Image 1: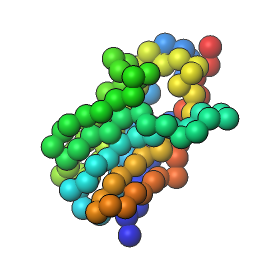
Image 2: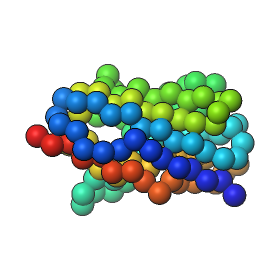
Image 3: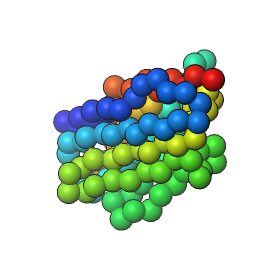
Length: 113
């Protein structure tokens, strides 16, 4: 059973920064990343990172967010800078392993104007 536990969400003013962390169980030979779901919106990709370090960002976060992972600790992090109210969402940690997708419980990020 794969388990993902997120931490680091909260309330921040526009222009501020937050760092999200996710601790995962199961094999580290997997794709990991972050998705988000804003109010009244569908869940969308934020960023993903392979075990080898290949990264994919959504256009909306390029240059502001940085994803990283520690394969030894089986963790993935998301550094979010220059936050705007449009970034307000529940952020979900994601792991893809052997064709299956796993999700964390989500952590709320709220950016005030």
